[in-house]
Length: 226
Picture 1 (cartoon, rainbow, N blue to C red):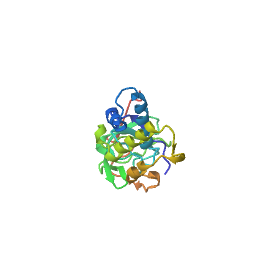
Picture 2 (cartoon, helix red, strand yellow):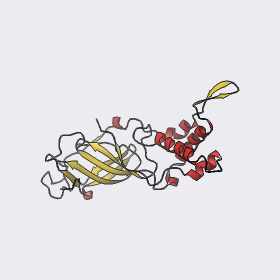
Picture 3 (tube, rainbow, N blue to C red):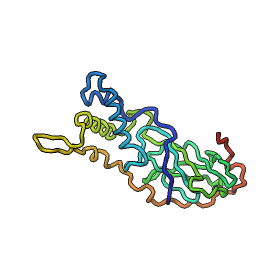
Picture 4 (cartoon, rainbow, N blue to C red):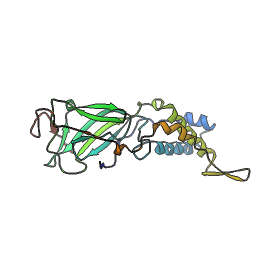
């Protein structure tokens, strides 16, 4: 199933690392290298976080948006773990963005990740515009709101990456006259968290449930695009 790129709506309030902890790891006793260490940490976090990585996870609570063409199927939400669904809207055939009321859906967690379930009291909208980004699902993903909520293996992986980059400014270093590639122990730590090919996983067909329809006033309501 084709899906547009997942986008970040609200970044996390806290990163899955702290400068104090990283300075302790690299044994930096002054503030002289704070900016350098912070830059390394931000790069390490970028390498391990988000929809464009092999992990497809968020470590600390942040809000993301998936786009679907319609409601006929319920694919796995791109980022894991899904904490909650913040809001669901769609563009109708009149070009108006409609808000789906929270009572109409619920979050289903399975081995693949989070997906949407629909209440029997509501019908799936039938007036969705024919555009690939017609449906927008905003959801909170992550293991918790604080840095300490990120998995320990993730925190350690960030420390190791920062430590390598802090001590060795190139990918290959010279030891006893022989080029030595830096070790990749981070792969060992992160391997269990890989989520490759989310788009390839089977999505769930969604039947037209409930008594409603495109004219059902309890299905959704127009929202102000401003």
